[in-house]
Length: 257
Ligand code: CAA
Image (cartoon, rainbow, N blue to C red):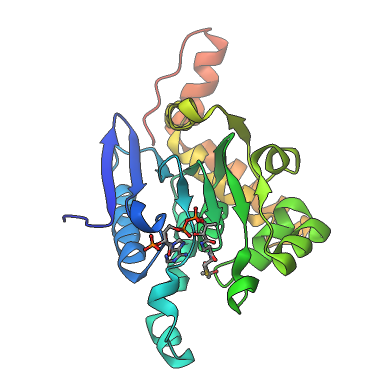
């Protein structure tokens, strides 16, 4: 289906989603989130797509939920629309999702990036949860994911003051995997996506699921969850192929089976 607020393309085995409302710094409204959900569904169903990259433009990944679209909403309207629930979609994807962030990633934009599996940031990236300055709080995961990513004290400071964090600090504190020059941030994210796409798909899916369980399970249960997935991989053709190829000193051919 045609998209109006995002640009969806496929490059080799990489699914690309560009947020495309540049006039409002890629503010996220219900239509964007609906289209994002459709694009994720499309990529999840397409076996040729192995990894996804979501990005905005140099000035803004996204400046957050669309304030204009929310300003007169009642609680019941917000509840009935429930578009904020869409923000969690990247985490629920089986395939890995990389956020390539340049410029502003604020409010719902920061939350969308944090819902992805890896953030690659340009040196101009700025992260923040400035909702406090417009009379609300982060509603799409910010109060939960930011403290897990950078620790409670700094997250609390950011959420209570609305101040932004620059890329170098975000890297130091573990919010982003890597900071790269602005000219190459998208290419770096695509290169990382291509590398992940070249790995055995079922193992990639299980690895993503297991790492995400860190946030949900106590250690003992997490270790058991990981162990069962590790054992289960011994039923795949890719496990045989990977181990045989290693011992034969040749490159493995993955089948995703
Ligand atoms: N929603 C709607 N429109 C937005 C927007 C947003 N979140 N962010 C920016 N825009 C619009 C501006 O209104 C402006 O539109 P006009 O040209 O029509 O006036 C345009 O984008 C450019 O923005 P600015 O002129 O403000 O650009 P700037 O360079 O001076 O400032 C900025 C950039 C610091 C990012 C500033 O735009 C800003 O503070 N934006 C709002 C950030 C914010 O509060 N985000 C949280 C939203 S609430 C949320 O996300 C809730 C949740 O958890 C789900």
